[in-house]
Every structure is written in structure tokens, then in C-alpha cells.
Amino acid sequence: MYGAQLIEALRRAAERKAAELRSWTGESPVPTRASSATQSPQLEFFGVGGDRMRAAGCDTVVDAKDLSVVGITEILSHLPKIYGLYRHLIAEADRRKPDLAIVIDSPAFNWRVARQMKRRGVPVVYYVAPQFWAWRQGRVRLLRDYIDKALVIFPFEEKFYRERGVDATFVGHPLADLAQPGIARNNYAAQFHLDAAKYWITLMPGSRVKEVRMNLPTILEAAAELGPEYGFLLPVAPTLDRTFLKNLIGQQSVTLVPESLPALWHSRAGIIASGTATVEAAMMRTPFVMVYRVSSVTFLLGKPRVKVPHFAMVNLIAGEQVVPELVQHDFTATNVVAKLREILPEGPARDRMLDGLTRVKGKLNPPRSESTGETQQAPADRAAEIILDLASTWRARSMA
Image 1 (cartoon, rainbow, N blue to C red):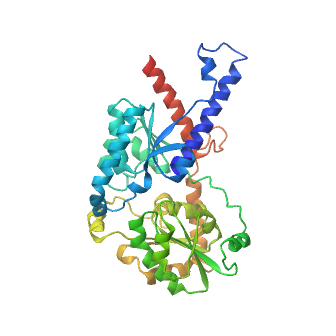
Image 2 (image 1 turned 120 degrees about the vertical axis):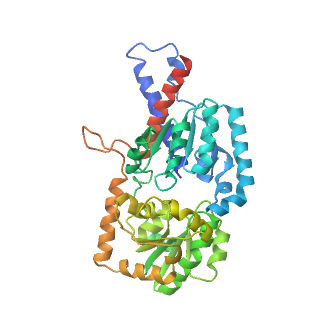
Image 3 (image 1 turned 30 degrees about the horizontal axis):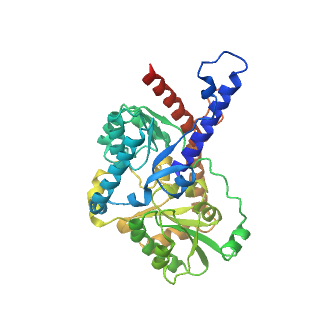
């Protein structure tokens, strides 16, 4: 999602810059190369991505699905395949000789890509910088060594990285400017054959096969315990196959839907696996219970390294517990149902969570103008402007 958003924003920003140059040509002297500069830049993108990035015009030489592995022990068995994809990507970079590298999230893979690009003299921007503040803080040195600019999406990250010598700028969260889904509840119900008279609960077990296998069975147990008085929606992540999900769901009454945001918007509550989906729920102001489970070995190896007081991103952003967190052994169907029953009816518990989600949404907005106090740009557009300005500066230095 973030990559496709950024590509579209980069194209918009490039067109704006070209339009500005075109407007100057009739009023003031321009450089001798202005005739080419005033044309819309031909931006070309290649790298790692999925369907959305392909639709945005990226040549995906590595499919993101092939890198969708979660957990310490799980990654080990996939290392030969991942290393082969990594070598293929670097070979393509050597052949195409990019002017700029933008790496997005996925630190275990991307810091190595960044290192290779840096060795080749290619400037590197990290968009959606890794959450080294949460664990393995010593790895911040990797950003200092191999990244020219970090564009961070959580407000507390800028200070954290700058204090450790990384040139970081908070641009806002890419989901902060999500619009309310336009489809009415009755129309949505008709489209997916849902009972509009029931409360709906959105189930989001993760976006990778391994984590879905770990999370979904218990989520389904909770749904069964809640009973037929509720409707259950399960958005299909782009990295997952519908047949795989149907096999896990079996005969249970769960409706697969293509997009998460309309499901969350029209749902009374959610059962959401830790990750980006929790931010989506916050943006839609949908109360939810956060759940997560990994293998026992992964949990034992990883838990001592965790440096933050909360697992749920919305709780970290708020600086307090806004949503309940059920992790590993606490993640049982009985516990999920108990927490949901606190927030499903109208009352103080639901109101407190809604207030907390509203505060989280406000904190994820892009920085405001010091003069007007207004938000200047959407997060992806602000990131694109910074990237193009940096690209121009780096290009000028290389030509000097």
C-alpha cells in the first residue's frame, strides 16, 4: 500500500514541479536546458512490490509475496530463497543504474539493499523507517551508515532517530488522511449478502500466511463463542489467497470481503492482529481488541529484546493503553470475547476507547504549518516533495 501511494505522489509532485518551471518560461530567463526540464519528468520505478505497485506503474522484479515471512525461526528456513531474490534485485539495479533508491519498511531485507546501493553511490531514502526503537536499538547504526534520509510516519520517531545521528523527518502516517468509505451500510450489506440488522465484527488475522495460521483459528473460536447474533467480516489482504482463507474458515459463517476500510467503517468492533491493521482501525474509529501469536521459540527469543511498554501501535502512539492487548498465552477465545463484550455495547468503556482512537488519529496527521497552523500536505505528498528535492540536490552535486 505505502509503495503504491508513494509512486502516485511522486508522479503528482513531479508534474507540479514541471508546471512551475513551465510557468516561469514566459516571465524570466531560464537555463539553456529549460526546454527539457519543463516537460513532465519520466519517472520509472522498479523493485519489490505486489499488485498495487504494479498497478501504480512499478516494474516488480521481485514479488512482495515471496518475502512475506514472519518470525525468527520461520525466516531461517526461507533464507536461501530470500537471498536469491535479494541477489536478483541487486543485479537488476546494476543493470538499470537507478538515480535514487527508496526502501520501504521490511528492515531485515532492506538495510542490505540500502548497503549495496550506498556502495554503488546511489542515494538512499528510507520511507516508513524500521521500528528499531521497539527492539534492537543498536541497529540504528545501519541507518546512519547506509541511509541518506529517513522519512518516518510516527511522531515520536523523528526525535528518536535524530538523537542517534539519523537525518529523519516526520511526514505523517500514510493512513492519516484516509477518507470515510463512500458506500452506505445498506448498499454494503446488499453487495456482500450481509444482514444489516446485525452488528458486524471485522476479523483481521494478519497479512502473511504464517501469522494467519497462528492467529485465525483462535479468532474463529471467539467468533463462534459470540454466536450468530453478529456478522463477521474478513478482509482478504493482497498477500493472501481466498482459497487458503476459505479452507481455514471451513463451515463457519464468515464473509470474505475485498477491502478492509469499508468493513471496519461499518463494523461495531474488530479483532485485529498487531500491525498496520490496528492503525487502519484507529483511522476508522472502530473499537477493537488487539491479538497476536508467534511460535513459542520466536516469542522466547524476541521478548527480552522488546524495549517498549505496549505491543499495539495505537497504544504506543497514545502513550497509554487505549485498546486491550492479548498476546501469546493471553490470546485465548475466552479472553477475546470478554474484552469485546466490554466495548460492543454503548457505555463508558466504548466511549473511552473511541476518545483514545480519536487522539491517535490526530497525532498521525502530517506536521502543521508554523504560520497558519494548517496541515500542509497529505503524508505521501509531503514525502514525495522531500524525495524529489533531495534527488535534485544530489543530482546537482554529482554534476558539479
